[in-house]
Length: 143
Image (cartoon, rainbow, N blue to C red; front, side, top):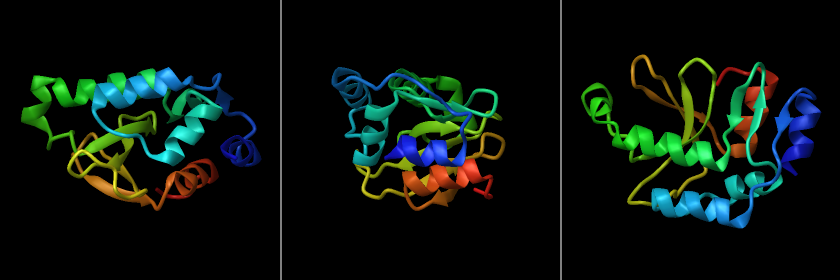
C-alpha cells in the first residue's frame, strides 16, 4: 500500500528491504512503546525510505531507535529543549527538523504527525496520519 503511494508521487525514492519482526520489536522494547500500526505496516514494506538527496522520509528501525534514545538521553538537550519523551521521531526534512508521533502516558493515542523545529523547539501539527504526511511531503505541500 505505502510503496504504491510513494512511487506514484515520487519515482526516485529509495526503499530498503522490509523490516523483520524482531527489528520492529527491538524498537518497541528499547523505547518502551508500541509503534503505531500504520508505521509498522510501512516498515514491513520497507525498513526506511529516503528521497531528495537522502532526506529520511521514514527512518529505518535502527535509526528510529537510536535517534529517539539519543534525544531522550543526551544531558545537554535537557537545557536546550523541552522533553523528548513525549515524541516518537521517525523522519526528517534533512535540515535538522524532524517528524514525530505524540506520546501520552507511554502510548501513541492519535495518528497525528507533528514537526519538531530544531531552531526554536516548536512542535507543530503537520498531518492527520502517516499516509497524509507522506503525501504532503512528496507533493511538496507545506507541512
